[in-house]
Image (cartoon, rainbow, N blue to C red; front, side, top):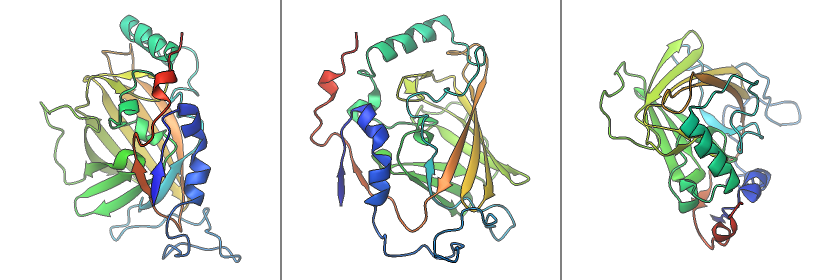
Length: 257
C-alpha cells in the first residue's frame, strides 16, 4: 500500500487519524499488549521491562498533536531567545510559509523535528543500541548504548549522531553532528551545526512516554531551551510506506507575503 502525500503543511497536520486508520495488519493484534476486558489495549498498565530491568521503549508511537508547526508553543516569554540573525531567518521562514523548507524537496526532517511531525514511528531494542524507524521519509536513527563517545569531528547529517545511557528509569540521549540548515519544526525554528540535543525518555506506563528535549545551539539561540512532548502507544498496527513528492501540487502556491 502506498501513501500519496501532499506537501501542504495544513493538510499534513490533519492526516494522522486517516493514516492510523489505514495502516496495515489491523487484524493482527500485537503480542504481549495488556488488554482491558473489552479487548482494547490498556494504556495505563505498568510499563514493560527488558531482561536487565530497564523500561522497554519498544513499540509504535505517535506524538501528542499540536507541535508540528511550533515545537516551542508551550514556552513562556523569555524561555526562547534568538540570536539576531536567527530571529530574522525564522521570521522570513514564517512569512514565506516554508517555501524553502528542505522537507518540501524530500530531504530528511532530522531531529527533533521527527518527534513533532504527525507520523508514527517505531522504537526497537537491538544489541548495543536503540533504533528508531520514522515513517516519514523512511528515515531511521541509531542510539548507541555501548559506551562510545560522540564523534569529535563528524560528517554533518540530518539525524546527527546519538549515544545513550540510563539514569534510573530514564533514557538519556545526547546528540550532535547536525547539518547547518536544520528546521526544528514546520515553521522553521533554525538549528545549526553547533546544535547539541539532550533527550530524556521516560516510559511512565504502558501507553505513554514523556520526552524532554533540551536544545543547546549557541549559534542560533542565546541560551538552551527545553520542550516537553508526550508519545502515545499505538499497538495493533504498523508503519506504512511513505512516498515523498508523488503528484505534488502545493509547493508553487506557498508564496507567503
